[in-house]
Structure formats: structure tokens, C-alpha cells
Image (cartoon, rainbow, N blue to C red; front, side, top):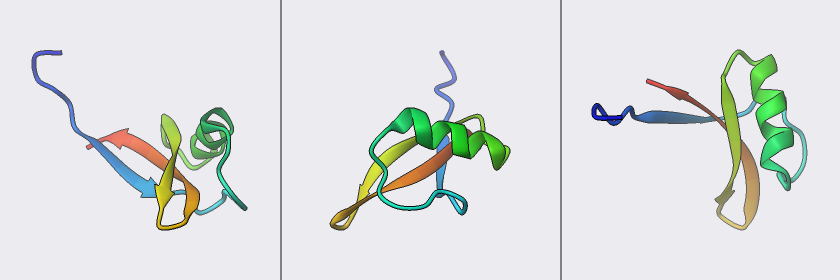
Length: 54
């Protein structure tokens, strides 16, 4: 949109193991009351990060 909403990412607390599917990550994030989530590379690992508009 015209206002370009910014997304804040915070690492999921409940997600365990390596993040392979962003879909799976997003489902876990919804249980942590975030609307969405995605896998992001963090050093050598891929982790699940939850995102919301901040």
C-alpha cells in the first residue's frame, strides 16, 4: 500500500529444529499470536521467524 507497512521479525519460541517450510513456520507463529512467519537464514542455520506489522 501507499503507507508501506513495516514488518517486525522475532524468532519463534515454540518452533523446534531447522526451518524448512515457511508454511509450517507460519502455523507455529499463529499459535504464538503472530499473523505470519517465514524461514530465514541465521548464520549457518535456517530458523523460523514470526512476523507482524509493527
